[in-house]
Length: 459
Image (cartoon, rainbow, N blue to C red; front, side):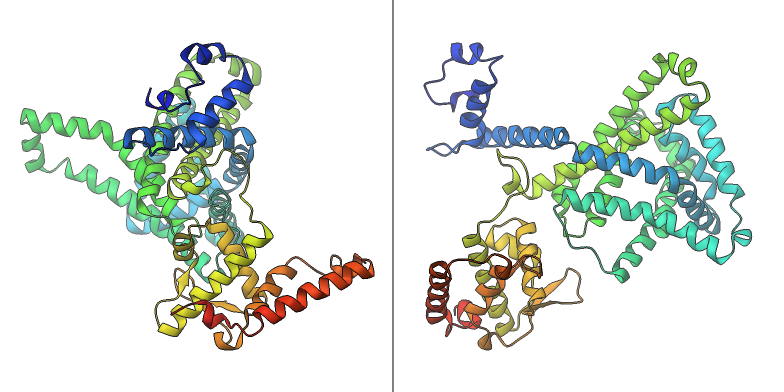
């Protein structure tokens, strides 16, 4: 009701009821109540309500656009190809650590929403894994096996980078180390934690303590919450570890909570659907298992990507806008932002401080990460900036800032996108226009030619 009270006085309750099936009035009401900033500051409760409404609208719009669903379908296809190699690698590592016997119950738990079919799919998958003979495969076969497993992690990274509006890919070395950690170290930690938890419940001291009514009740409640907590922790880890950007823990946890609760709830709903849809077996015969398995994979990936969208919008609330699509800068804003970026980097370099990163620049300038990252790439292409080898990547000037003029930066920003197929030479203009452009360029040179990038950083 607080949000409704913030609507201008021309909207009465009767107007609100009468516009239920009038899209134009609904859009007008949303624009006034949700998107337009009021003249007076909102209270904290009203502000949070508006933010939640904005988040819900933007998330629904993203789902309706089809990009998230399309990438979820792509991940289903990649999963079908990579699931056996991925589990085979994990199985080999877990076998070395003596916890490989946990893989069957874990797989059964993931496929539990498929009902009775989960037992058959788990048995076939385990059989495939056990039939993978590394000695028979040879070096080429082993390389293909590893590549297929790595491709799934790479596909996940691409999907999450798309959601986080990240166009810059990781380097080969960093990508290899992260993927290797996810494929080899991750399963060991997960299954070891499960094994330790199971072992702890069998210790006599803990069993005796659980006989106390209050402690036993608390342990029982914790046992019911454990599946949710494990899924939330897994989702949060993926949101922090996989995208090629710095994801703060708070937004990642928010996405993990939403994704984890949705995934557990979807599992219950999907199990009910499978139990009540006996006609599928009659229609699809032996393909029913595969179709249900693919549906569950698609739903799982869709929920994971949806949670990633939640974490992105929580961290970057500047994207909570009424208009859809990627935000874009005008030519004037691009020039302004490029000069400010160069000035900040030059000043920090002069003072010998830690180099700016794309995230710290984005937060300081209050501009979307994608826009800052795009301009950093442009300035790197033209030879003004170079990335460091640190993690996260910092940015340093290539040339002495005192020898780089503001005119050089403006020229670099203005010619970005031109190539031999698209440049002023392929668009001839009249002499009057050419003369005007030359005079404007000469005026810019006279005004900015003696202003160095070092001076843009201030004192």
